[in-house]
Structures are given as C-alpha cells and as structure tokens.
Image (cartoon, rainbow, N blue to C red):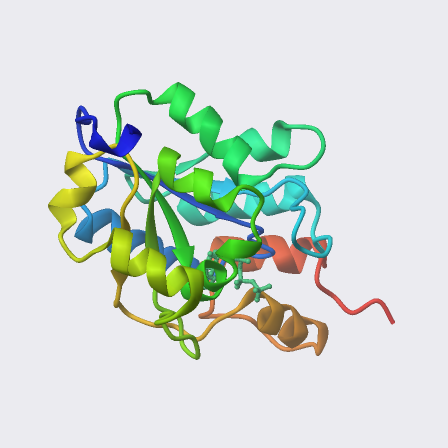
Length: 221
Ligand code: ATP
C-alpha cells in the first residue's frame, strides 16, 4: 500500500476550502501546521464548485484573489488554483489524485478543521483518500474528536501523535492538532458584513480592503 513507501523530502500540506472569505482561523491553522508538522509548504486550494456545499457567495475569482492577498507575505504559503481552473465538480479524492501524480515521492498532508473531518464519511470515495494523503485535523471550537462510529474506528487504526509518522510514509495516517482555536467562521463573518459591521482584525487588512472595495458580502436589500 502507498502509505508504506518512503517519501523523499518533507511533507507538502494541502489546505482546501471555499475560503468565502479566508480569515485568521484558516491562516493561523495553516501557519501552526506548517511549523509543527515541519511541512515544506502549505498549498491553499480554493474550491471551484464544491459538490457537498451550497454555492458560494463570492465568485471563484474573487475568493482566489482574497487567498492570494492573505498569503502573499508568508514564505511557505502557496496558492494552488487547480480546482478553480477545473471545469465542473471537484471531488476531493479526484483533486488529491492530481496532487499524488504531481508529487509521486512526497508525503501529502490534507489539512481540515474538525467540523470538516466529522463530515468525511459523506465525501465521495472517502476511504480512498487515505491511500493518497495523510489527514491533519485542526481542533475547532465547538467540535469534538469522534470516539465511535467509522471515524472513531479510523482514528484507532490510523491516528498518530507522532509527527515523524507523517514524514516516514506517503499517506495513510491521521494527526489531530490541538493548537490555537479561533472561533471565526466564514458564515458568521458574512453575516457581520451584511449587517454593516467592520470585519477588521478577523482577517488581514489586504483581504478586508478587497471586501470593502468590491462590496461582495454587502446585503442585497
Ligand atoms: P463556514 O463558516 O461557511 O463553514 P469556514 O469558516 O469553515 O466556513 P471553509 O472555507 O469552509 O471556511 O473552511 C475550509 C477549512 O478550514 C475547513 O476544513 C474548515 O474546517 C477549516 N476551518 C475554517 N475555520 C477554521 C477555524 N476557525 N479554525 C480551524 N479550522 C478552520
């Protein structure tokens, strides 16, 4: 199996999301995992047309622009626009296959928040994912790690607290990161802006500037 082969070089982090918009909850999580897991980079992967979510509020191009603005100054933060460029639905498993093809000898760590991890069994071909990548799960306020059901069993089988395990195999392990938990969500953020409030200090100023200039989250009254 894939996860028994030995990788060359440090793991590559992949952080997918709708990023509608990107905020400090995303950025702090990515930064901590970049450092803690000793990743070579975190590739931010804005979703094009996510199959399991309602359609986004800001356009793909604008969400991409905000991710670029938010990550520009941090070495090791890279924007990956493959899902935005791809036409049609993008299932995570298909996207991870493209990463596996691009990085055949590298360990890959898919970064998700705990809320997203709890929804994993609803993802298309979710068990295949762990043949392609490791999963790094960030705790998020209000969500608990599963102790039973398919994910509880998966954690018993694949869970690890040993970072070297992510460096020594290409895929197949799950690491839970109990780092700084910021209670910021894109949904709450959009409500705040629609109510005419200022999102300052929830995100980099460069992203706030784009939101204010485009009015993309203003309420459509
Ligand atoms: P929404 O409020 O609409 O659910 P979101 O804030 O979760 O949006 P997404 O773009 O859907 O933003 O999230 C992308 C990924 O980042 C998901 O895996 C999610 O769990 C994770 N994430 C989002 N916010 C945080 C946060 N504050 N702390 C840790 N992880 C987060």
